[in-house]
Length: 158
Length: 158
Image (cartoon, rainbow over all chains, first blue to last red; front, side, top):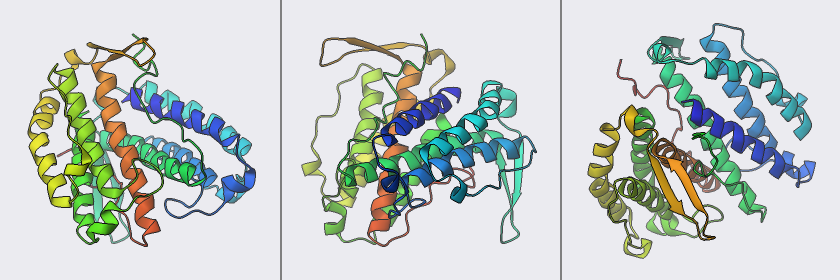
């Protein structure tokens, strides 16, 4: 569990560095699919990660808007701010939390029940999915995307 | 670990069904990014998943070519064939395998060491990343992609 979060944080950092070579306009350009742009995707990833961690802890969720985070620097600052809490929660994760229940009332009134373990893996998969989208837009811009490899990053710290 | 593999198999099946509505030509069209096409991506995902499982077990790897799998039906058959072995390995996975070492000599002669736990998560992330790419191509085709949500699929079987 923790390893996949660390993988996500590491590749996200790689993407921030990748973004440094692009004009701000390219980072904000409206694109087809996903949430519709490079910076917007990074904002969405950190927003969703943080929001789920907040929700599991019963804390108020983030209500800010991408309109207020229209440059790489602001996205990185928001990420750094949120990371403290997210990292603490992930590091303190233990097996006993795996089957705790999270209940959500859907728009149609149906009550959906998931375990905390499902929610955490949802957050992991959510980021990897959106990063895969960035890799297509990168190639469409004629640029080499960040490597998605998990092996070779020393994540097991053996 | 097992939950993320089951998530991948489930979304992969959703994508096969999604593909049924497309012409074969669209499935084979060369696209920008990733491995360059929809069916080719699905072939690549099942090839890579199976290959890693084979490599960890010290068994010979798959050497076939996408040229021989140019339709959805053949891809599904290959997946079903490989799934038996992959599923058995994943289901029998236990914590004691986590830190076993896998060593690989890189093209530059350097020896890279990863744990089996890293390799398994690499396989998981690999598929989610490529599925994210499919979701962009889907929108470029004017079609709604398969949901990437992990929650709501009953994966925890509570």
